Length: 317
Image 1: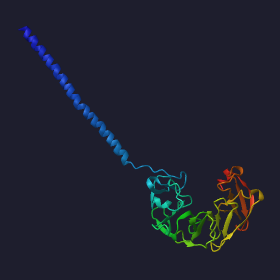
Image 2 (image 1 turned 90 degrees about the horizontal axis):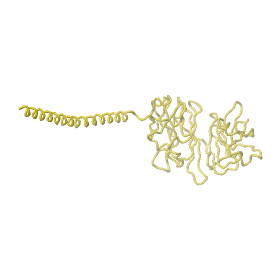
Image 3 (image 1 turned 180 degrees about the vertical axis):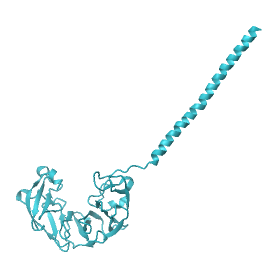
Image 4 (image 1 turned 60 degrees about the vertical axis):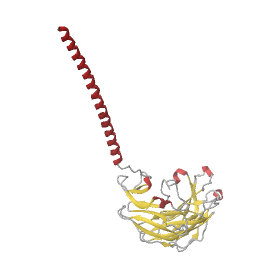
């Protein structure tokens, strides 16, 4: 009888051990999937959180009072160092239409104005390549509202473009186009009402490629011509707001003839004007970066050599 009791007790112990093993395996089979599901749920929540956060816009022009970005093929501007961004109502591709397209990563140099009280962009639009409108899109209230004015009703394949304002009312736009080899058409437009309306100035009849230009006041402006292998600078001046243009006389010392060949936009310094004349793309005098400074005391009609300007000083002129 005792042997039967021991045998029964042994069977019960074995049964309990088997049941414990089965329970443990069953518990693991339930716990592991639940743990995996929990981990997957956490990962999905993190991904959704990251996707919900907007992509941070990075400015192209760092350390400027007004920043801009072309991120995600959208032109945005910021007036508070990138804390807030305002979308500009223009397609990115329109900003690069023309013979010269830039690199697409930053706006074409001088084709825009970025100031706290005036932000604007000069570009062409229209489906007809032979007759596109040149327009100026601008805001004077930091992007709350935008206005578009027509600079030119019809223009063929814009190449050079430059827009700037000297004050709240007076501004200028210099554009060129219809280029054939080393010849093109260039013209200056002026505004006297902050960009609402533009008037075309008298044609200079110069067909060489324009290099640069600008106004120092509402009456006095300059156009610099010659970009392909020039041997001397060609600078035109107006003293009557573009009604007439005349070629300026630049007295270049024999030592620098053929060295300083492209005039940059003159600037006013007290009672006289100053212009830097660079060596062009093929210059090799003193490394090719030294410029010549010329001074005018008769409002830009004649210019006399002053001194050489080293590259580091020329960058800050």
